[in-house]
Length: 373
Length: 248
Ligand SMILES: Nc1ncnc2c1ncn2[C@@H]1O[C@H](COP(=O)(O)OP(=O)(O)O)[C@@H](O)[C@H]1O
Ligand SMILES: [Mg+2]
Image 1 (cartoon, each protein chain N blue to C red):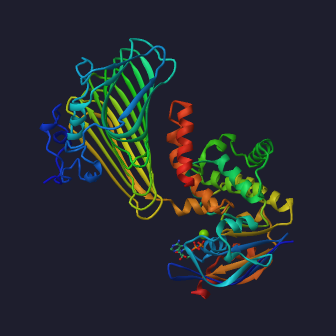
Image 2: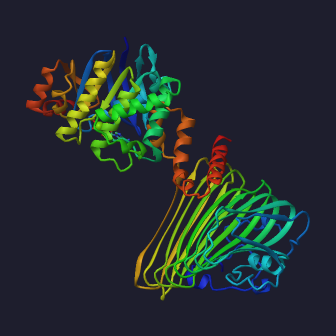
Image 3: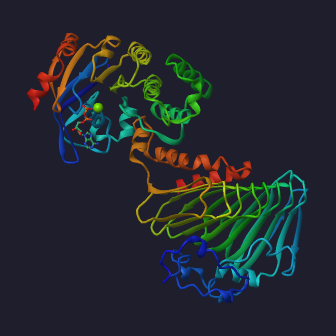
């Protein structure tokens, strides 16, 4: 039975580079029960073979940053992250080239480094490593667009005292399918800021996870999604606190509109016995703008130590508040504009957190376009 | 010269009859006080006129200069010149006061105000009501104290300059200083133009600052007695007991 409740710490135990170590999902497993497997077009059972246009990776790098395209045998690949599910292992088993971005020790990248992933149709598997050596600082953008059936793994290695800010934009064409793991490994006193924006694609399943190798790590994971009719956008977060005195904060917000618009948000946080002094909070909010849309939101917090600095979670899914709309309309503001103001307000504080101004404007424009359409 | 005419208004909430035939005419230049005990239906009257979706009109009319407001949407009523200062202003997360006010002024005037002019008006309005300028950047009503919310309602009143203003317990929860500041705002609004005011209140306190021309006693969902300012003095002395017994 896949639906029984197991403690989180056992749920996330399995890790292997070999897809054969994972059963082909049936949809009954806890980690697959929300995902419409038929729409994965074979990513999950090994039948989707790389073909067609694939996904082209282009990088516009800051001058302080080193960008390499490497083969499977490169020492830096697969160091921080071992695949934790079937598709992730499948992607790891078959990708041909990996992109490795290195920010040398103490280097401060003067401009954002932008990796653009452009789907040209067909099936593709990928791997990316973003490595910040000790005390380095960088802003990295992962920009996904075009059409593809794509599975990949991204490793963020944030060295001691380093600061990495990442924006990952899933702005795919309507028919794209993307299944991805983003794993961040934080060293001593490392800072990680992730901003995920998922707008386009038929099915996107993104699993951001964070682990700590030393005390003092600080992770902020922010996400925003806008789900239209027929789309399945799934975000599965895992923060594994296994070191003392680390911090994590997860805030994901989504709006849904249209028939069969489906959002899934899973927020798992484990605070292990060793992780004394952990401070963590996770929040998910969904705004259901029409009938026929569905949001599944499951926060899970497992605390195995008695000594936490703070631990909490909250999840709420609801409709636009009639009282908000009434108040604005009672001041003459027409309904459509009142609705836009409230939705913009719902997202606004999040969007302000995007580091790169160009991107902030692009995301704002995208959200505006979603609201208008 | 604007006129608000409420004719035999009947309103239900969740199938419960609340207003049982309210008749009242407010002309520009007049201030009417509606006074009544808690639960008598005063807010129901205010919300029904403004068009709150929870309140079902089961009979009657509300005419503003001959136009039946009940046929219009909430925003259309406001643009037609109606304003409701709410008893419990709603908190709207993520929408800043300045953004909200600019949107409201634009909607009501039918064109966007010049930015500099708007900024000047806003600052003057906030100064007059002793509102900290930092409020412009705050989220609408979020974390405002009771008094701050009420000042902010009157700020909107002064910026939007409606033809008819319905003020629902704008005085409740205010300390003496705040009551004075808010009353001065209402009086500025009254002095500024040909406007009618319907002042809903439970207590006579505010009527010492904002002098009504007419006083209506509200009980059991209708007006049960009418008179001049002297009626307020009588209520002050005797309370509502006589009316609540009669309407029960
Ligand atoms: N939104 C509502 N839902 C249910 N009952 C309501 C609602 N608004 C008002 N009522 C009921 O209508 C009656 C009148 O309430 P209200 O108009 O708020 O009175 P007042 O403002 O005079 O205190 C009360 O019995 C109240 O319980
Ligand atoms: Mg009331």
